[in-house]
Length: 142
Length: 371
Image (cartoon, rainbow over all chains, first blue to last red; front, side, top):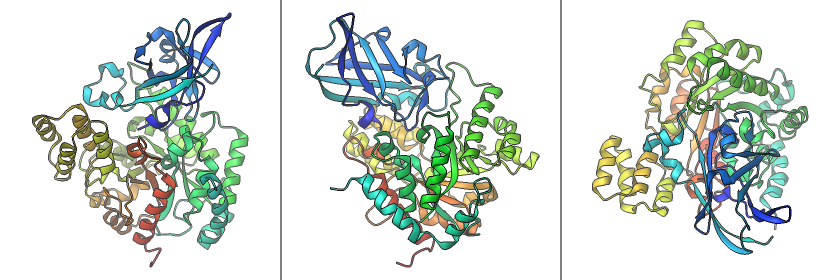
């Protein structure tokens, strides 16, 4: 499906605030064949070397504006454009170590026919989503 | 080594001026932006060829091709019909800049192509937990009718989730912007079902000329794409069960029986997902198009895999084109390649090459070529 290009191989780095490393960033493309309003993006889950992160540790920036995942589902007026690299920032004190990491990403998108959140869909309709896991080994250098 | 992009830009400009039929060139030159001819008008009674940029989605998202490269690739097929998905191809959608509009028409002139169909995307589930109101729906549609009009399109594809009452409410706007709105007949719709009825009811009651249909050839899948079965096998499905699923669909065995059998055979989640994938297509008889063919304004020539022998693995193009010819259809066959998603985990799909192979098949079936 779209796994091939979801994770951008550049832009993987630690981020700092006031001299302290507070987390890390990566760049993602949308796992779809067109851009979408943010309200259709229900979740962006990131796992690094098997470690997952709480929902409120994730921020997604598109078009120069940053949103929490809970804010995103309320914003039908803001789009993640088709070829846009969204900046995903994950809060993790101390960031990640320099060197190679295995990164896995799931973008949970409410596509198709139903207005229901994906968690309430019958499994036959939600089944495509579970497959949409992108993974990439990437080297953190900064 | 020449890149694909350079190759396209070099070749397409040259090919555009030599291979396009003179009638199309004349009509492109004669048609002003506001009054470009209706589809088929350049060559009455003839089915024409085009491409939707859906085909080039992997190349576009990775910036291996630009929208100009897509236009050039269409011209290089010796044809002129371009189809644009706003949400895929317009920078900063839905804010259409005057500069991009001017650029668009410069590309149409440069490559002797013309806008055929604009794809409107309608997310009925835009707001979590409730359906859209009629006004919200109308606002989405009218926004895109305006975009289509500015870019010279006369046909607007609407996704199959768009309700008939929304279409009806938008007719005055469609008249104003001079476009025909066409809900897409898309798998798993059955032509024998009542799916078309609400739209036909509106057309018959109001006598509007601004509502019709786009037919997607994914409703004529005789056997599921083997490239898709291959994807599931690489992701954990059993090869033998995957084959069983393909045969079961082909033999029109009901989905619930196939699912039950797959479970009996020891199928896993990926096997069951492949059942869902395979049965997301429909296997209609192309002759059923004759029942409403006067309302077919555009088609998506969907395909998943062109073989080395220039055959589509799943879809009976010979039967479909024979029926459209019998019906007097004079619109476009717009190539819609969708095989990339089933193989791009192991290779670059190369949509340009797949579309080129499909057009060899289309030219032969349309009688455009003796060779």
